[in-house]
Amino acid sequence: MAESSRERPAALGLRVKTARATAVLLSGSAKAPHVLARRAVQLWDPKVPASKQPYHEGLELPQGENAPIVRRGCEAAGRVALSVMRELLEELRQEGLAPRGVGLVVSSDSEPEKLKNAHVRAHAFEGRLFREILESAAAACGLPCLVVLEAGAYDRAAAALGQSPVELKRAINALGADVGKPWGAEEKTATLAAWLALRR
Image: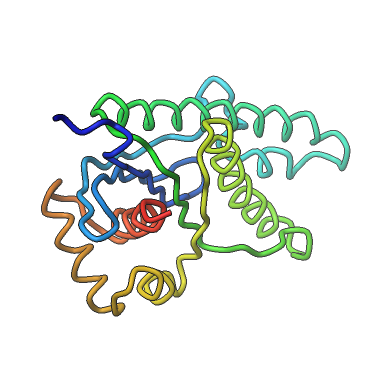
């Protein structure tokens, strides 16, 4: 008897950057995951230039005048994130797989409001924006979403997956053989996040 999609779990991992992400589609079990594909995805709309760096777009404008630009850019980025999320999850479903969750790797969980330098603050707001729109997109698709800080990610994930950090790094390096190069830090951490989401 053929396996049903419910019996064939999958997960999506993304290393989130400003306006883009590296996505890894993972299937199998938490004990024996398999990389199906990796994708470089764009999270902004070229028709709405402010969606690439919404908070930077408004930096030169007086307080109050920048709000419509920031809002328009953030909303456009949100629409793109939802479209990207749906496409990636549909790719898994087309393979007869059932997505279990989404894992996001981010570089920081700082509070932008506390930063004094306007340029640094804009970067921080954008970092939070692209994380949040992907979290919202996962929720809109009915999937749980976990967020992993890049610093110390292997140590925390190793404990959750019952491996040592060295074993986990070795396993993720080996998983890259399924898809070939590039298999750098972004692909590896996206795989780590997907692996954690797969075990939920």
